[in-house]
Image (cartoon, rainbow, N blue to C red; front, side, top):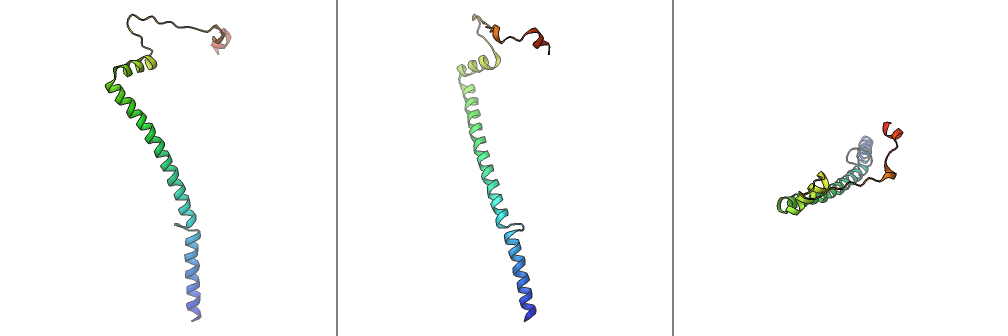
Length: 101
């Protein structure tokens, strides 16, 4: 009977060890839940970004004005017959000594 109590006590201690500290413990489960929540937040942000990109792509496929706007802003293109003026601020120009560095 004494050996049975010792064996049961060791078995109980082993199960408690696994519950509180080992693989699959409550702390491990809490960490996994935190990682899952972080991944879901990241995925939501990526879904929103992908939705914006899909909207831009659809707009570029169907709307000539969107293509023109993209070409003007990203590529610096101008229409035929337009005059392009580049205004340079004298205060923001680097000095000759700074330009060489």
